[in-house]
Amino acid sequence: MHLITPARWEALWNGFGLPAPAQEFEALAARFAEPHRHYHTAQHIGECLAHFDSARALCEHPAEVELAIWFHDAIYEPRAGDNEGKSAQWARRIMADSGLDAQAQDRVHALIMATCHHAQPESQDAGALVDIDLSILGANAVRFEEYEQQVRAEYHWVPAFLFHRKRREVLQGFFARPSIYSTMHFKNQLEKKARENLARALHKLDAG
Image (tube, rainbow, N blue to C red):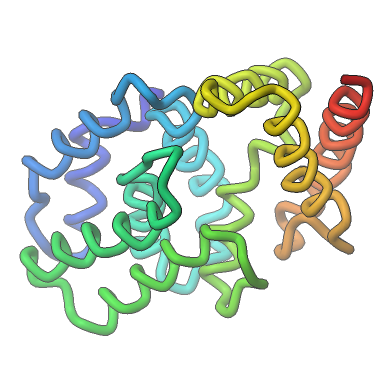
């Protein structure tokens, strides 16, 4: 999306009072364009940044949340289970090399790890970031269907029966939550639509 630009990258780092590591923008852009990616691309990052722009006021450290958005899917291998950890390590290395203080490095690292979605967010910024990452669940019906197709394409080698079973577990996990989103901003904007999308997707999976 148009939000993935060198100018935006530079403005982000200027917000920390630091020069932008231009080579890392190129490295991230190349990662987002990897051929095995279909959902975890610049499209997803751009959508996250758009939601971040509307929810910036939710964040205690908005620049750190934005940096976590840029890096949370920096490493993405569908067959691997440590993508977030490797992405967080890459982000930490760049932050350290750029001179960002250790506390900020720790917070950004923790934010990226929160996108594993294994537990409830532990901070205000983590809650905002996790909701932003899950904003696709509350997209319009056309975009949500495209998202489902993109996820399937990233797991194209998985037999249909197994993919349907695993995908149902993931979607049912979100649907079963008392609330999909943890912030009132995203609850008010996306909760109803997300539940409609998930119910439709689960029905489709059940139908075979």
